Image 1 (tube, rainbow, N blue to C red):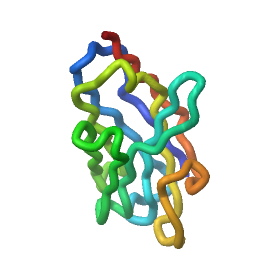
Image 2 (cartoon, rainbow, N blue to C red):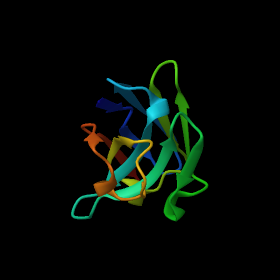
Image 3 (cartoon, rainbow, N blue to C red):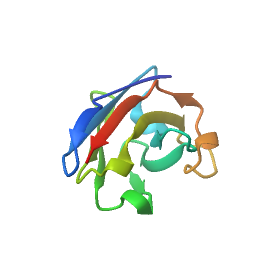
Image 4 (tube, helix red, strand yellow):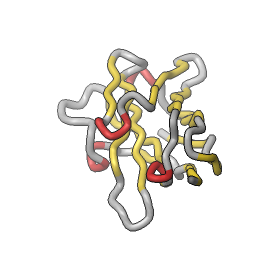
Length: 125
């Protein structure tokens, strides 16, 4: 499975961005697609996941209400909409995939087997 993240950029506080993650070599219905972010000098942080083609989603508390995850199963693409962006949201955003039928959690970076290259989001104040 390969993942390609895109859509990042330089925005101002309060702006919105939509990130995309194109998945190849597998179908969304068989995977959890997670989004993580990593700011300079910090650990990679879980943001949200899209489970098995949209059957379930989950958002981390720090971004709840400001992010929306969605997917297009026909395009094998998962989208992450970021709203009301803050300077502290500046980070590299990664998408990742794990087997959708494996028992266990889906909130840690170690839960995921495949990673995209990341896309930089920079929010200026």
